[in-house]
Length: 399
Ligand SMILES: Cc1cc2nc3c(=O)[nH]c(=O)nc-3n(C[C@H](O)[C@H](O)[C@H](O)COP(=O)(O)OP(=O)(O)OC[C@H]3O[C@@H](n4cnc5c(N)ncnc54)[C@H](O)[C@@H]3O)c2cc1C
Image 1: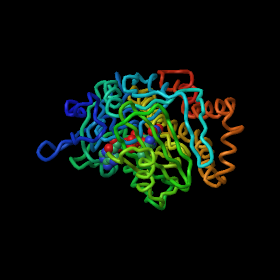
Image 2: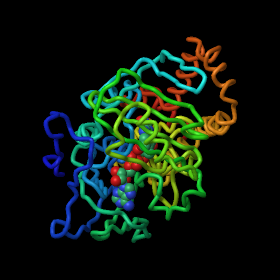
Image 3: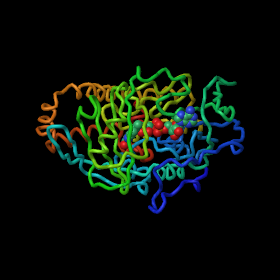
Image 4: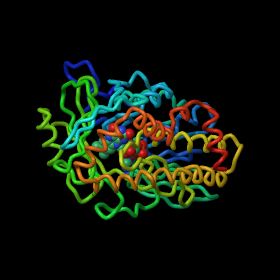
C-alpha cells in the first residue's frame, strides 16, 4: 500500500499535511483485473468505513482509489471526538475543543458545547482505519464507469482495467461517478469550500458568519496542534471563495499556503441506484448548514458495510441489502431537509438580528446543549460501536 512513502514534514516530526505523490506512475501501473465479492470505490472516510465492517468476513474485498490511502486530505478534518474514539482512531487526534467561538460583525460569542470536537491528522486517521480493514486489498486506480456484467454482477472500468463484483460501493465523493453524475457546478445543490494550512498554533475553534467574507456560508479557523486550517465555505456555488479565504488568513495573520478545496454536496441523494450502494458525499450525506460530512460518511459507510456483511455471510440477498440501506438513508431525509432549510434561512437574517439572537437566548447554555445534542443525534457516535441497540434498531426500522 506504500505506507512507507508517506512523508514526514522536514524537521517537524509530524506527518506532512501536504500531499506528496505516492500514487503509482508509469511502469508501476500494471493492469488491474479480477473478480471480487465486494468492490469499494473510494478510500476516504466512507469507503474505509464500509471496508472496516467487512473485516473478518470471508468476502474478497477490493478497495480502489486514484490516490494512495491518506495521500490527499479532503477536509479540515474536524469531527466529534467520541466518533474518533469509538472507532479506535484516537491516535490521529491533534487537538480537542470544548468551546466554539462564533464571530459576526456585531458580536463574538463563546459557546460551550455538550460534547467536544477534535481535529485530526488525515493520513494517520486513514492509516488507522485501514489497519482495521482485515484482509481487504487495495489498488490505486481511477474509476471511470460501470456497466452490467453476467449474473447481475457489475463491471467497473478503471484506468488500469475492468474489475467485476456483485456488490459495488461508490464512495468517490460528490461526483457520484458510478451513476454518471448528473450534478454540474455551479448549477447543482453544491457548496464550495477552500482552505489553507499554515503552520502555527491556536487554542480556539472559531467560525465567522460575516457577509464581508461570504454572503451565504461561513469562514473557519480549525487549529490542529502545529498547523491551522483556515478556510471559507459558500452555500452558493457561484460565489468564489479564494479571495475571502486569502483575506481571512491575512486578517488572522496567517500565511495562505497549502491550499485544498472541493465541492460539498448539500442535498441528500438516493443511497442506491442501478444496484450500486452510495455512501458519503456521493449520496449527499454531508450535512447542510455546517458542511460536516466526515461523521456522516463514517456513519452511512458503517451502515452500508453492515448490510454488505449480511449478504456475504448469506444472511440476506443483495436486493434486501439495497432496500434496507436505501430506506435507512432515506429515513434521515427530514433531518437533512431541516438543516437545508436553516442553511437557506440564516443568510437572510439581518446581521444585527443575528448578533442579538446569538447573544440571547441562542447562546444560553440550555439552548446550546439542546441544539447540539439534537445535532449530534443525527449520526450519533454510539452507532460506531458494534451491534449497538442504536444501530440494530435503526437498521431494522429501515427493513
Ligand atoms: C475545504 C473543506 C473543508 C471541510 N472540512 C470538514 C470538516 O472539518 N469536518 C467535516 O466533517 N467535514 C468537512 N468537509 C466535508 C468533508 O470533507 C466531506 O463531506 C467528506 O470528505 C466526505 O467523505 P467521503 O469519503 O464521502 O468523500 P471524500 O473524502 O471526498 O473521498 C472520496 C475519495 O474518492 C477518491 N476518488 C474520487 N474520484 C475518484 C475516481 N474517479 N477514481 C478513484 N478514486 C476517486 C478520492 O481520491 C477520495 O479518496 C470539508 C469539505 C471541504 C471542501
